[in-house]
Length: 181
Image (cartoon, rainbow, N blue to C red; front, side, top):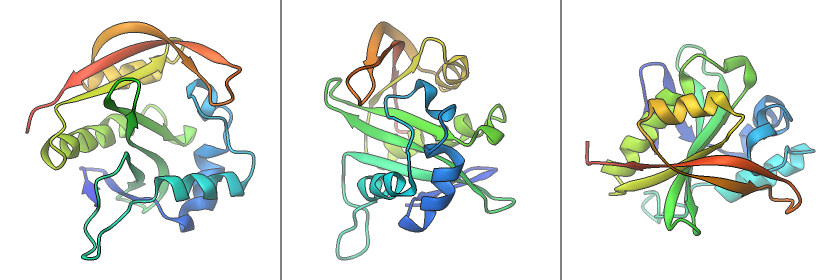
């Protein structure tokens, strides 16, 4: 499923994106500073992640319902893949949660907000989702801006664990009611 905005093309990621993703954002410790996953230590980590987020299709080629919908963010003007984001099923909330990561050379340009608006429209219209969760580390002011620009409403403070089970960070948790735009 390909989505488009004024400046971006959002497309499913493929294994061919491993090198770009690893060197652009999945292997960057600064990009991963405020997320629950650890920075990838090798291209093999990124390949394994890409296999996990790969879109599944039925025999007619239509996307199957799944527990995550992740797109690569591509600049229309240049064709450059610079980030990823989407919807991840969060069992503890019983909701899809938004998530996103982009190459730091593209921070503060409004790309993440633009991409996530398109993804939220897809969630409402194509998947019939009426409520999603979002959150950010309290220190991650850039992500707070994205969440607020998207219209999320603060729900509560939380503690988010890293996948290593050792580290945690204080977070702010939000919800967003969607309509069939």
